Image (tube, rainbow, N blue to C red):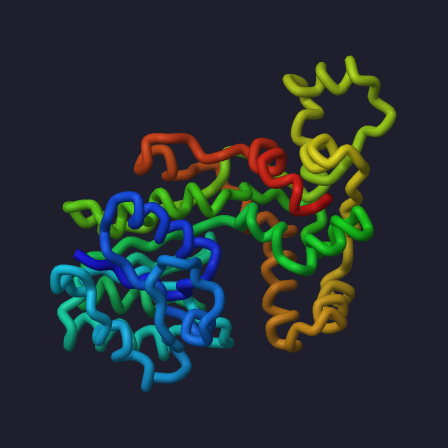
Length: 311
C-alpha cells in the first residue's frame, strides 16, 4: 500500500508520516507549501497539491512509489476556506472512482456531524459511496500553543489572550492523533466509524496558565498530587507567571485582525473559542486508548517536554 497525506506540512500529517516511515510504508506529503519547496522534512517525498486548484488533483497519482505501489489510503485535511466541502468532495470523487482509492481518514472538529457544516458533507459522501472510512473528531491540539500568536504572547508578555472564558477543553497532542490515524489508515480491517479524540484532562485556560508564585518549594511539591495540579502547568514548566487574558468575542476578533488574519478567519477562530466557552468542547469520552492501546498524553507532560518553545 501507499498513503497520501493531504495538509502534508501540517501538525498531524507530518507526525503520521513519521509513523509510516518507521513502519516502512510508502507515503506522500501533499500541500501547497510542499510544492513551493518548503515545509517538508528532508527525506520525505512531497509535491504540490491544492484543494482550491483542481488542476493539481492528478499530481499525487502520477507520483512513482517504490515497487510500483499505488495510493490506497488518503488522509484528508480541510483547506483554509469558508466552505471546504465542495473541493474536498470533488477530489474524493476523483480518487475513489478514477483511481480506485478505497480508504479515507477525515480530520474533523470535535463537534462535527455527518451531513453537517464544514466537513460534514464529506463525511456523508464517504458513507454514501461505500468507502472504507474513519472520521477523527478531535479536540484542540496542544501544539496550537506553538502557533505564532500564543507563542509570541507567552514568550514576550507571559500572557495568553482568548475568548474561551472558563470553558473546559480536553487538549490533545497531535502525536496521539497521529497514532490513531496511522491505525485507521493501515489496519487490515476498516474502522468505518467516527472516533472522539480528547486528552485525559478537562482544562480551562486558567488551569493551564495560572501561576502560584507565592508557593514555597515544599508547597509546589504538594500540589503535584493535589487539587491545584493543573492550575500550575505552564507556570511550573516555565518558572514564571503566565496570565490568561479573557477577551470578549468582539475584542478577540479585533485582536486577530490586528495580527494580520483575514476577517472571515478571525471570526471563525473566535467563534470556536466562544463555543468552547459555552461548553461545546467539554467531553469526557475519548477513543485514543481503545484504538492505540496507550492513554493520551497529559498536558503538563507535554509542556515540560516542549518548554524551550516559550523561553
